[in-house]
Amino acid sequence: MDRLEHTTALDGVIDVVRDKVRALPLGSLRDVLHGHPLGHPLHPLLVQVPIGSWLSAAVLDLLPGQRRAACALIGVGLGTAGPAAVAGWVDWAELQHRHRRVGFVHAAANITAVALYAGSFTARTRGRVRLGKSLGFAGLSVMGIGGAIGGHLAYRQASGANHAEAVQDLVKPGWHEIGPVVDFPVGEAVRRYVDDVPVVVVRESGEQVHALADMCSHLGGPLSGGEVTDGCVRCPWHGSVFRLSDGWNVRGPATAAQPAFDTRITDGRVEARLRHQ
Image (tube, rainbow, N blue to C red):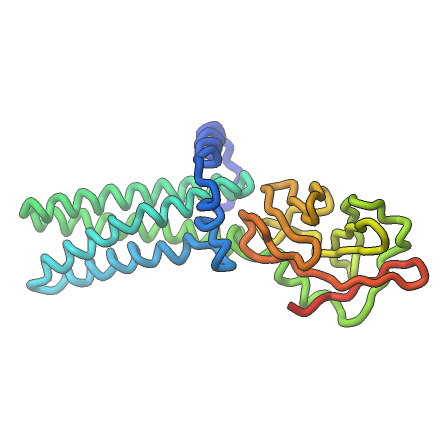
């Protein structure tokens, strides 16, 4: 898996597929597929249905008199694999290059598993039960490989994790000075540090100042390098939009809000305190 992260052989194909996925006219459905309403990625939730159905079908294949039930479960898995795959592809298109390399192989394994289960379902409906079982067990094996690769993507590479979650454990309670108010141009994102934790600071007209954790919750992109508009900051890496007043993720691919800070100006200097959410 480590070698796969740095293999460039498929980068041309990966870039083409990524551009096509990002060009899909999904509108607001794209954020739903990312899992924005849930607060975490949707894809891991959806894949439980086909995985559970196919694993259950394999168990029934080992028992006598369960042919129809096993076939029905394989059909359920095939019917629900599509939405799970769409959500996965939408998430995949917003990852870093090394993540996309691993994710592409993960998807290839899953497509192979779906093809094997489609063959199994067809064979069973035509009365070729032994062939159907063989294809089903082959599909289960390939699905297991794809799942292992997906686990590497999720847990080793942290592709679906909240990359700003640790902020609330790293910042000490109380007020922290982050600099003179004159050091923050109006309407511009500036990086400062609170207990060595990077924060993005934006001063609005007057003396109103906003501060959020600088590492984007999606993949850790620097919000201080993003565009500030309409009371929000846009991550320069993948376009997630966060509301400056409270860190709410207005638009994905981020599914978690940014940790926000209360601010005040004392003797011409800005102070920040982590807001408990």
